[in-house]
Structures are given as structure tokens and as C-alpha cells.
Length: 349
DNA sequence: CCCGTTACGGTTGAA
DNA sequence: ACTTCAACCGTAACG
Image (cartoon, rainbow, N blue to C red):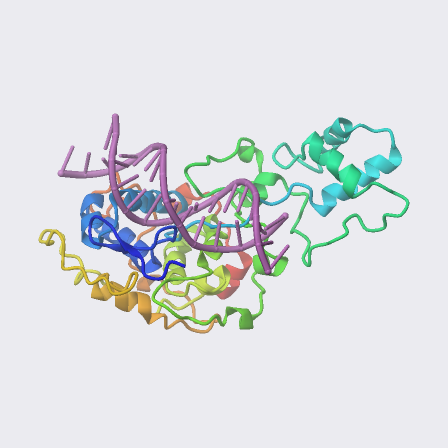
């Protein structure tokens, strides 16, 4: 129970193990795009430079300011579809070896090398789930409420990382571009989650706290790379202050409460090294602008009005390294080849 | 001084 | 209901 956060060396408040509030993440990106050096951003927002570095790097890479998906488990490779195939193989050839099944799964395109179960997994499946073929009418005793979406998809379709720590798995290039960029993780998201048709009532989350987005992390990560480059800016902004919303829904948000200017906040040249800290509660002690921004949370109905790029301060992700003033902005499409608009997003637009 | 990287102690959530 | 485990977090420190 994080309760009240800690104070870092710069006087900033943080909660160990938890992501920085989106308002601050956004501010970091905003300031960087104004040409402020990361070291100054770090001092001004009182966020460790490592964190600033990481957030900016991630933004450049994914186009999102949002933190990654925390918790949960990797998608299981032994999806119902895979189990079903294994059962079929076993039925056709009761003497088949696990390694032969494995080869067949690969050969038949049921799995690819990323989601191919190990021999021991197959053995376990044979033992635990298929043991008595004649009695087995259901391949899984405890079927999940929602079967995993398209379980036969290659593993990396389901589990491609945004993180720089995990490079794009090999073989990705061979995949269809529009698929390869889809990031549907955590897998545990139900089909309805992924399709963005979760009921609105579920989006009515009690919005307490200055502390952002109890449920955001995993949500935020979804479809991160999904976004049409042109909408990336709006997308990330819209996601920011409506942390509890489904990605698709929140991306449809009107960017209300957005700081249309950071100029009042940014005093690039004349920043006092360490403004007086006011560590009241975690993240409330940041700048007035910021906390107002954080606590605003005046998010609107998920079917909010259309996005307006003009409400967005942020340029698409660009290379901060080479960023002088925000002049030579690459079309993000180059950075994010998957410029397909997610159906839900498109609908929202 | 700046900044990329990483060990560390932490939280989270599916299995 | 509880535990495990692997994901992610930001900070601090190193280079």
C-alpha cells in the first residue's frame, strides 16, 4: 500500500513501484518538445533523469507516454486451439511422440516458433488434458470465460513488446505489417476488451485520488503501437487524463483539461534549481499546473466528441537527439509503419 | 555536466 | 484464498 510516496533526491514525490502520473509523463514529453534538455526537465519536474530518459525514449519508440503493462502473465501458448490440435494428432496416431506433435504444430501452422509449446508442455497436455481421449469431450476442463482471441496467431502477434529492453522478435518482419504492429497485451484481456466493446458501465470507475489510474497500466499498454501516426498525438493526450477508460474509449475523448500551453509552466532559461517542494500527497506536490491537471479528471463520456488535433500540444514522436526546435518533424508514419486505424479508434473519430 | 544503462526494491495481476 | 512469477515501475548510481 503505497499510501504517501517517497521523496527523491530532487525533492520530487514518487511511489516506489508505481508509474509516474500521466500528467507528469505528459509534461516531460511536452517540455522535451519545446526543446528543453532532459536534464532540465528532470530538475524542473523533479523526476530522476533516468526516468525522464526512459519516458522520452519510450515515447520516441512507441508514440505513447503511457507506462507499460504491469503485472499479469504472458499469454499461454497452450491455447485451446493448440490443445485441440494436439488432441487431434493424438487421436489420429495414439503412438505419436510429443516432439512429433511439436513438429506438426509448427508444420501445420498451428503455432509458429514463438508460441510453440515445449515438448514438456505437450507431454503435460497429453497427460493432464487429453489423458483419456474417449471421455474427453471438452479439451479443457476449465475453459476461460472468453477464449483467447485468435489463439492460432503467432506468438509475437499477441505479445510484442513496446519496451526497448525487448527487441522486436525475429520473424516479425515476415509478418503482415498491420498485424505485426498490433499489440494486444496482456493476453488476459477478454475479447470484448480487445475489441473495445466493453460495457460502458465498466468504464465508470470511481475516480479517486490524485494518484493516477489504478487500472491504467495494463490498459494503457494496449494498442500502444496501434495508433495511426497522425492520431498519435491526440491519442496519447487523450489517454492521459482519463486513465480509467478503455484505450479505445479514452482515445476518443475530448482532450478536455489539457494544458493548452505549457509556457506559463516552462521557464526554460530561468528555472530555479529546486522550487520549494510541497509534498502533500504523492504527486500532489508537483507544480500547480500539473496537479490541477492531474486532479482535474473531468473526463467525459466515452463517446465524446471528435478529436481535434489543434488541441494537442504534442508533436508526434521525434528524435529528441536531433531535435533542435520542433522543426523537422518526421512524419510519424515512418516511425510507425502500422498506420492502420484501429476500428474502434476510427469509429470514435 | 549530460545522459544511457542497470541494480535494486518495489507493485501488480494472471495463472 | 493464497502463492508464484514475470512483467513493469522510478530511483540512485555508475560509466
